[in-house]
Length: 201
Length: 201
Image (tube, rainbow over all chains, first blue to last red):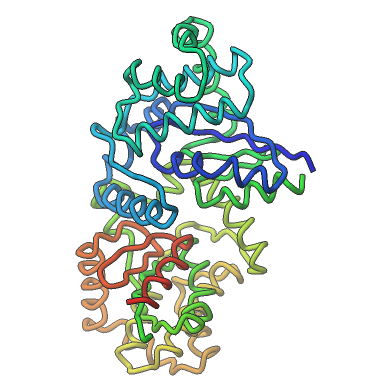
């Protein structure tokens, strides 16, 4: 029916990894188009007084999250390693995705880049704050390494800040989040509901 | 196969309502027995510096939760009203469930009582801190109203405190939680996984 889902993801977010690795296949099956929205949770967390991930602030919740991720990845056949340090700094990765979009790459290429970066971090123990890692991801998906320069431009930096403002305006408080026609769905567990909503819009 | 799931619920918890209304049917289908564990989240939240529900402390998360509950209850055909005030005081209700268990009521009767109390609160706008509400719930499920006296005894008060200690020892940080063979599952979204784990133990 031509519906759309806005997929809001933060590269440091473990549950965003889960959604990234399945959203394209599921959206295609539902006939739904994906708008890829990288953003940073840091400013949103800071605004509510958190200086780091809630999984670090609340140890029992953190221990549970790692166990939950381990179980879910095992069920889905996904590699999963705990990044060290956690959370990783995903600013450069988020800017790179915006640069790819500004560079008029197709949504499929953007999706492939996002998957490559999450795979490097959670599947392959790589540090996504490193330009070398990001460069390898670009090469792996056939995108120009020059996008790294664009990613460092003032234009793209401003665009990432705007993404944060848009996320706040949408009442987004965590990741992954999905927005369909202004309606918010939070967490990988709500991906099915979000796509169903988009398919019937 | 005779597996068991320990179901840890807090009467003030909205998502515990969701699990309560479906766990018995699902557990029966999976051949899994339920151990009913009322407990209080208050002391656990206080220990991490929260003076009220995180849904009140973090407004965007709170707004989302009410919308999420509304959508899920509509899908499941469950009545749902926002309790006022929220969270409700569920101490008396939790003690009443422990009294029913101490009074050697069958798990099915305990389950019926738990469902009646959640239904009164979230389906019928009743105040579950009121003895009248709890008394009506007992009558509705054919249990003796005298259990209210037992619920006020020192023995049952001590038992509820012990439940809190057990919950902490199990690393429980929210509700609903499910424990299968020492493995923790958190949230109504994990009920299926917990029952599958219990069925294969």
